[in-house]
Length: 284
Image (cartoon, rainbow, N blue to C red; front, side):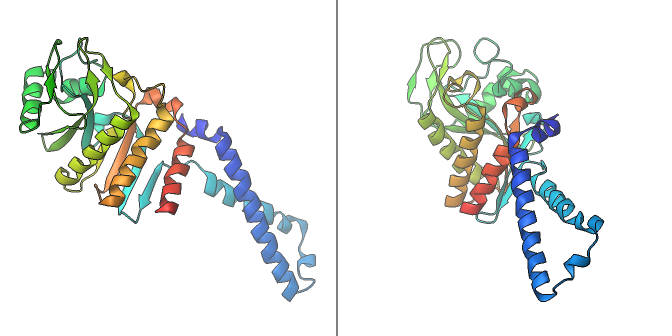
């Protein structure tokens, strides 16, 4: 369970110690001031009553350090970021879908069935490749084709960062191209490309989401080839920073929900993510 893992985390115990010592210091200062204005009063307190001091400090430290849901609200801009574990497609929000620059949708030989794209085909379109392909192409209407690649599947290339917004049953699916497929349908990308793609993604969300919440997977993992330079924890921070930079320029939407797959949860230090979110509030 995430809870038991959090309380075993060194960050939890370090926070517990810091807040506990801070509380003891404040209580000690208050008692000294009280003793200054009311001499000899503290000397009359019995031992059981004295124990209330460390107990109060410990309770305060536990309250401050307890693992809460990982979320943070920001006043400037008026937005919220939340981290949850679960199924991306079970979220009652608009969704971000990472795609390649050819916007292929067919599984399993081109797109992995376990990928977010594969789940879009399975869970939303019920394996109807023809309809998903048609909706994607309709969303790409008017977008510039910059070249072709001789491979199985789609051959037209679009600029990296292109966003094809599909509206299906009242949900917007923001399909953003952040990887390139070669002749063998092998995907590749880079940190710089991912950052620029996310900038364009947030622009699209700002225009078409009507301010409604959007959920996104941890982008930059999977078949993109960036997992060695952008591990899970860094990928989460990268996504958060991108959203916050875009939001400070102009509000993107009311909430970003980052969805972690249950099998990836053990790779994430939730307390560290919460500290990171809180640090952005202090700097905003």
